[in-house]
Length: 68
Image (cartoon, rainbow, N blue to C red; front, side, top):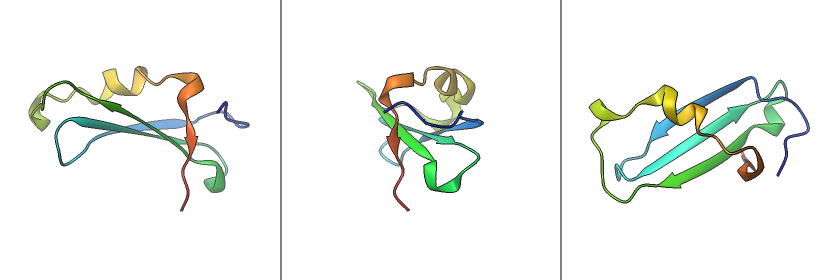
């Protein structure tokens, strides 16, 4: 899904399984916040999780609407 509004901020979160990266994209409309995820081949430690690199790895066509 291509967002109808520009994404103003992206947060990268390492999930509890340490193998899933969740990206949340925020727009100016809270009803249009977006999400995408990546599965990692191996678990990583939070200390080695590079938030900024994952935020930059967001795929423009892979966003899905975050249902609240």
